[in-house]
Length: 535
Length: 51
Image (cartoon, rainbow over all chains, first blue to last red; front, side, top):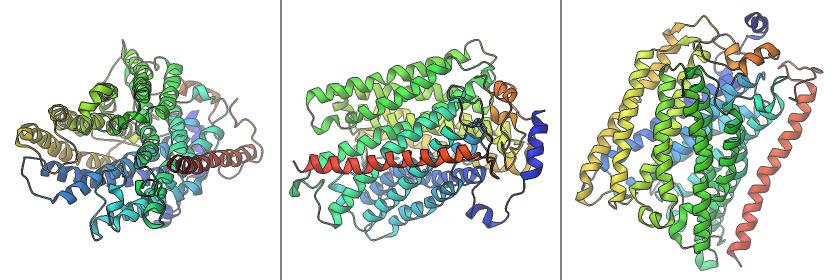
């Protein structure tokens, strides 16, 4: 019945534009989602090459592959590319593909705006990357763009600020679209508390984006006017305050961390029940925990700047509010483990990435707790310990969740199954060498190695060599991922059923594989909804 | 109750008239929130940096 229902709509509406027009004038959420994912993968490659260059320079003490300014440009651009160019567009791509399918909507609510938000990105990325080739090179003051250092760069400075504005506009438009779609285009009967967790986490993420991307835009606009129009928002000589930039930046920056990780929580909450063949433990608690984390993310920004000099009362407030985040995060980790408890587990690639996420994201969370403690942070601040911490959160956290999500939904998108053996190779190489890459950086940081330096004292050499070797193998093993995806699309084994995963629930699995070009033009029936909503 | 309960004025994309109206309203509200954060933080910075 479900297939008949969709096939009728499918036959009538499945004509699609061809050639370049299909992509340039795209308004279909699946096409736009695909373009986002391709853009994110491209930027992941470029940002990854920058990371390889960084690790090559740090392979041993005294290496001189790059001059110090170029090295600092590489670290700065690696951060900006990975955050704004790779992880965020990957989440928007997954949101575009999956939100309409999961809530039973025919498309995103604002399809032309969707087209605009995507097509802004290639211009922004080009502008950002082109800054490597202008006199003076790319901005080298760190991704946080602190004044007055940031003010000292040449033509790259306004180029980066314009690129950030464009990426910010794109994110805001994307977030508006997500909120409007989820609030208005849900199928009849799809109440808020029946929505899949990925949709919930994206709804909350979109609100975070709406609140903080304009703050970043405001902060960099003020830097621009300080530089070119004689204002002194952050210029001490003119009565301004450079520390104020840190406050404004981190008011954006900390919720940004959750923008990067909340959709990952959503994906893990989809994958674990499927491969445990059990409903998600504590669905409502998961929703409230996500909302709590989002709320708390607005009141913890000071923990990024404990050493800047702030009153003890403020340090205490930020320390305690930061530690409070461990409570809802703990609820989530507990619920994922409880979902697996006595489940009928199987370990296909999405589940492997999800389980690795649980362990490794928790390591990043615990080192975050260590950093939240003011007295300890005075020791850790500005060292490789911080680098290890946020890479554990972002690589085996956000990036592994993206891999898990793609391996979970790729059969739905392509109608074909990927090479399971190769995907498992991708997983094992990634999970082993991501630890070889980042775990030693904890030791380096605790021993006092500062971050953002092109060279270091010889006593740090051994663990840096281990870290670099881990980095090279981790980087090389990522080549498997596009190969697996392309091989799947071109010659994967076709899938006959609606779902290749026997434990999967959700409206997306009520549709045929591949999902028709136009889906849910007739809303799903209550029976589909009831089957799909078994969280 | 989920919004998509009436099926009046369904367009080619399968979106109802009621939904299109609510889409317009929500878009305005969310856009204004974003604008308020942009302007609000610049105003706060001006007030704080030039006391």
